[in-house]
Amino acid sequence: MKPAILSEHSRQFAHLRFAYPVVSRRSRGLSLGLNVNPDKVCNFDCPYCQVDRTVAPRDKLVEFDVMVREIDELLELAVSGEIWETPRFANTPRELRRLNDIAFAGDGEPTTYPRLGQAIQAVADLRAKHGLPDLKLIVLTNALLLHRQDVLNALLGLRQGGPGSYELWAKLDAGTQPWFEQMAGRNLSLQRIVDNIALCARQLEVTIQSMIPTLDGKDPGETEMVAMAGRINEITGAGGNIRLVQVYTTARKPSNPRIGMVEDARLDELADKLRQHVEVPVEVFYGRHWET
Image 1: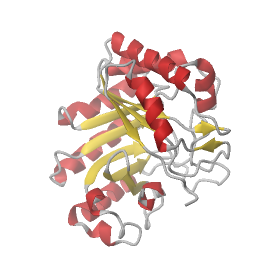
Image 2 (image 1 turned 60 degrees about the vertical axis):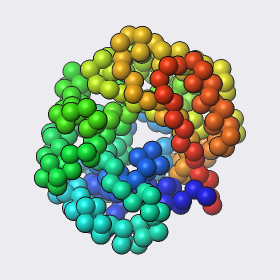
Image 3 (image 1 turned 30 degrees about the vertical axis):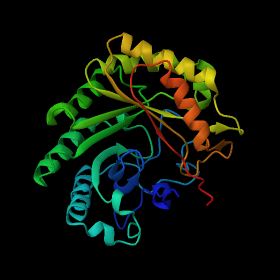
């Protein structure tokens, strides 16, 4: 049985506006999120995204000092253990009751936030304040802007805690241009994404996150996975440091009804096809039927 808490990734918690706690299957514990895109604006339009953009956002701009206070408050709750007494988290399995990270994610693309570098520094300072040197800082990105020097400069701030103190999760959901356009929801260049990840991965360790859903009941298939392996090998061949490839599928209800979940056994098959063609570790994270 997959815990229902793994499908509960609401970005609303108590009175907080920009920070939110979730129990994450990929973090294997509590992840404290920072929504630096509360306006819901994104440069991708992924069909598997759960953000409902038909509903107007509560906030259009980040109030920086408020956001920092909120993540500080969540850290207090997590460190004290009080968070597990709240109604949302009271039934969390014991093995998931651990604080793993602070993640820059939210309702859009975090690298579009102009104060990302300052936010990373502020969170690093809070990590020190609470005596949590092993707490990871994670930034999730679709990699579209990783060629920009201002974005790279902001992300380089992740390294200040030393090896193992951060993870940069870059999205690579496809190996071919047609499937990429389906998954990105935009007419963008897959080669640009691959080149951007390679550029960034020469300076920072990168985790590839590959969402594998069904589209109209069909998954991308083995051929697409082999093509994706080729893209990953292109990145490592260019000197990119890839720590891990995360293969996962939907666990929360997407905004597009054409998207579905790949069953566990089939996801294993697709991940195994990828493993046959890459030399980096591949880890699978199973989905959950959100209707149940």
